[in-house]
Length: 114
DNA sequence: ACACTGACCATAA
DNA sequence: ATTATGGCCAGTG
Image (cartoon, rainbow, N blue to C red; front, side, top):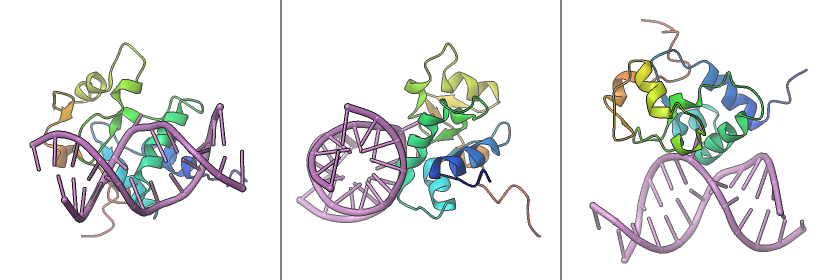
């Protein structure tokens, strides 16, 4: 089974589930993984993500303040901010505006019940 | 095995 | 307001 499910695999899975035009935070993912406090590892995992697949929209993951902390790691022509803005997210000075509007939380997208 | 690092977060001074 | 420090825990040297 591919149940190796390292901490990283879990992170990738969640990040892949982030819908278009939405973002989430490291802390939320960490907490969702019951690894509260290990938010650093979430970002760490994403860094390693590039060694796995490109299907991981890491640009949709920001820190608590909505600040694009990992944009520097986007060694590419498109920066995190550009990608996010391309999805309709408003960003100013590398900081997501109305974060609360675009914030997506795993397990909250399905709207379990009324 | 030990030391250091890291895309975070919270608290203290 | 900022700077420092502790905590978290996996990965790498």
